Image (cartoon, rainbow, N blue to C red; front, side, top):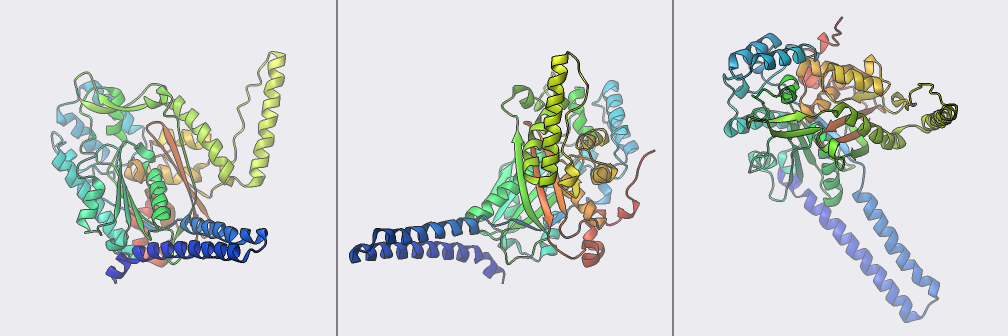
Amino acid sequence: MAMDMAHKDHLVAAYHGLLAAAGLLLCVLAEALLFALRRSFTLYLVPVSAMLLLGRYRRRAAGGAVGLVDFSCLKPPRRLRLPLDALLEHLELGGFFDRGSIEFMTKAIRSSGMGNETYLPPALHFLPPASTHAHAIREAHMLFFPALDDLFRKTSVPPSAVGAVVVNCSGFCPAPSLAAIIADHYRMRADVKIFNLSGMGCSAGSIGVDVAAGLLRAHALTYAVVVSAEILTVGWYCGKDHGKLLLNCNFRTGCSAALLTNSTAVPVKYRLVNVTRTNTTANDRSYRAGYREEDDEGITGFTLGQGVGRMVSELLRAHLLTLSLSILPWREKARFAAALLLSMRQRGQDKLAGSSSGASAPMPNFRAASDHFCLPSSGKPMILRLGKGLGLGEREMEAALMTFHRFGNQSAASLWYQMAYLEAKARVRKGDTVWHLGIGSGLKANSLVWERVAVADDVAAGGLDALGPWMECIHQYPQWEE
């Protein structure tokens, strides 16, 4: 059976090619017959029209809706857990941070909203940390293989049926690539298409899905896997530059794996209804807002530049304007357009009068565009600030806040942990939409909008196994600090 599934993509591609050749041949023969019989000129348009309609049909078939079969999120082993007090003690015992750096990280960690159940990779439990290439490769194995094993088990899809593998990991890019490590471990077929994305930041998961969707459509594949993770072993910063220490404070271990398809014969849980990508990389200030570089002592780290908040705000304004045109219902579009025109008129009148009303620009009601929200896990203050800017309430921000509290910032994988939280709470029903919003270095903002198409409730259908990484703790959430 596995061999049959491994050759299914070849058979489908061959069928489409044969169909196209047969259609073209029939149209040419029809044209030749009409020419030989010297029929009316208008009849010559019939074969041409048929050929154009066939081409349009094939393009629509190749560009069919992409669906999410299922996804898995890794719950690291408990031996890797590092409570906050133990982490702060670990930083002091390491011997490479000065007092000012320790105080800075202590303040940042205490105010971030992170809990005591987050994880760090084995190499960072050592004193001093073992940030070697070999340890980073072992961390990749520890993350990828359990998450993918769980995904293949849940979906009953063997690795031999996967036609494309897309891996995104910003800070670690070995040779052979991380995607090649996966293809080798699972002995995937010789024509599997593997892609490795690096340097894309926390929005890389959405880019990976976009790349996988394009591969499914362009190559008549049945399945594509998208893996999101961050290898922290080589990303840990041991210097004194406060601008580079925030990565140590917020980022924690995690990995997600998602299985996509555009085959109508495969049952899916979600349908991908929108992909929107925006970047302001051509702006030098935006380009330098998040940057990996060496400090004065030659230690490499990731720097958050000055004015990054302002640059992110400008990026989001451009991104949300584009996105809102696609996902907002018409009634909300009309309301927002009227409010925007009224605001512009008021500003014009204030300018003529030489005064200012101080009113903020109107914002669309994004709660009318999506039922559930998965937001960048950049710490509680940033999540609250972003949620307030989007007009979201406590319930809409709950998944992001609780995921950061339980697992920390897992880069691009965090959005999938948030979706797992929503499923574990049994909140996502058929017809609901889930919005993934990711912001990454560059700067770039990427959004995915998923529509739930499966009827069954996740927890009722899968039992405790459907709770995923939240299996042993979902009953403890939400937790709201006083």
